[in-house]
Amino acid sequence: MSIQSRRRLASITGVALVGTLALAGCGSDNNTTTATASGTAGNAAAKTDCGTGTLNGEGSSAQKNAIEQAITDYQNACAGATINYNPTGSGAGIKQFIAKQVDFAGSDSALAIKAKAGATSIEQVDADKACGSPAWNLPMVTGPIAVAYNLAGVDKLILTPAVTAKIFNGVITKWNDPAIAAINPGVKLPDQAIKVFFRSDESGTTDNFTKYLSAAAPTDWTAAPGKKWTGKGEGKEKSAGVANAVKATPGGITYAEWSYAKDNKLGIAQIDNGGGPVELTGESAGKAVAAAKQVGVGNDVKLKLDYATKEAGAYPILLVTYEIVCSKGKDPAKTKLLSTFLKSFAAADMQTKLQDIGYAPLPAEVQAKVNTAIAALS
Image 1 (cartoon, one colour):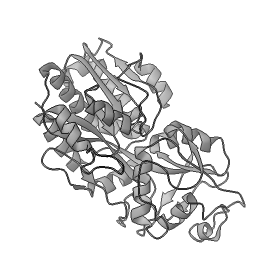
Image 2: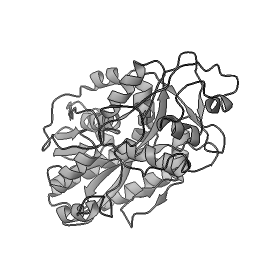
Image 3: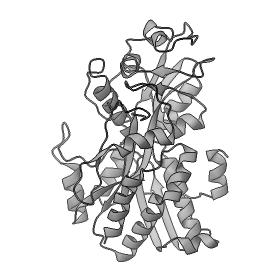
Image 4: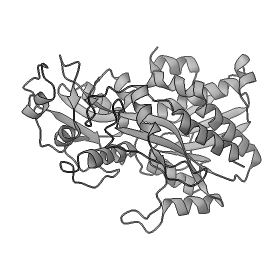
């Protein structure tokens, strides 16, 4: 069943006007997701610890399809609960959270603990102040980043970090370049121009993709990682924009969340970091996340990914979307609603379901830490 069909069946309706929508941020579809309880939960209600009331969230577009599914399932089980999520981008979500305009934020990068270039404030400090308690980063969605392409007759394509970097910084400009041919023996590569598309909006996906290039191919990608693209190509807004552009452009290539690549039926490159080509699957992405180290303290489950990993079978180009929450809420009813929703979102059955729409389930070790943190919300 397509994502669109699932959305229709799920009856996701309405519009949430969450704070100021004009803020710039790391990108996504400027659509608002509002899932409305059906009131006919059946057996699901017995399995879900339900809260009541309304929650507003904003931020990452990378998790848009995932959080839509989680909201729908939770509200089908919980009459009296309304959860609105506005996918305006990670940067906008963090700004709205700090401004106390939303109850939680979705971000593809954890709150920064140092001032960013040109800024005088620090995200983590500002979020803690807004909460009146420590703000926690809870990894909820593993969004593998696909190197997605449109190349007729090429069903399997292998890329290394160095070749990927050279494609995206404009050094390699033809599909039959000797560097691509050398790692794809037996593949008939066309004498065709490579058309690179990148995110024109500031994006957590760009941030994570450039972190990968910088870590895995430092000689070929010398620019500092960041949410603003510094390579070559043609810019398109948001995940849907780059995916649609590649779909419409023979010879096109981009970086986009797995779900968008799958939904647009694009080719997805296998990545060889040095341990052999790795196909993008839920299992291969989860293997890389399982190797991540927690760098947050206590229930702040901030992770450090190893983009340069050479572990066999681990897909290295990832992003993790965090739900950013106040560790101590000021409204007990909202705290219960938030904690029960996050508990259902992190549950093993929901995480497994997300794999069907292009996400990797949280590894068991990470899931356990997230559940401990959710239980500690007060």
